Image (cartoon, rainbow, N blue to C red):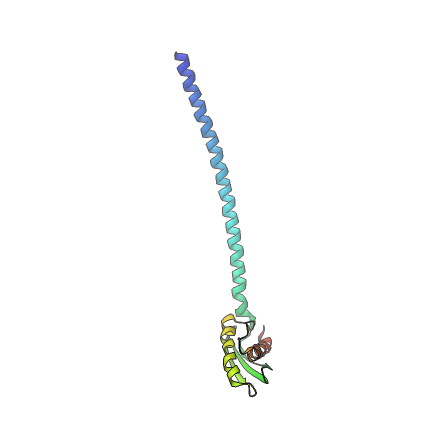
Length: 150
């Protein structure tokens, strides 16, 4: 009977040690996987930060400060604009002249200026109902910004 108790206790001890050994291997594997995951996350975050830095730097360094003029064809004639750039950003777009433009279309088309300043680019959608006039303003701004590009 004593031998059977000893064998049962020894077998239980061997079983417990085996379970602990397996658990230790699983824990070590999970720790390695966690380190790999953290490394990949850090790499992705660094990549995204570099991409954001490049993107946020682009508008500031894209244009030289100054006042630039451009003109293009609108609905009925030439539209001339004056574009102001401060600290590398488009801060104002003014219509210098649009003598032959239909006033109603021109008033609607001026809404494109808000989009240009907001996006810091003339690559914005035309204004519905004033497509030719707003495209004229956009094209004139593009011409002006060519001289501002750094």
